Image: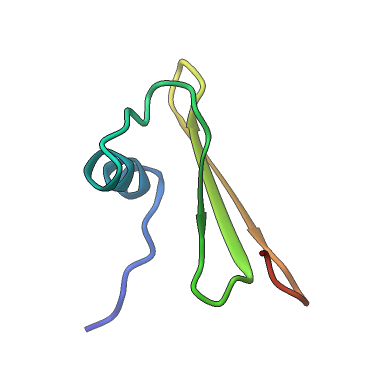
Length: 62
């Protein structure tokens, strides 16, 4: 089985189910990869869910 990488909708569902928060509140939610070399941010801008991703070439996020 291959692990899937969640997109904006999958991460919004994770916010709803894991922390019982409203992903459409305008708050920014940050998800860090296990290896700490990538982060994804999602937020609702009033028209749709925005997804930003950042991958570091070297180093890691705290």
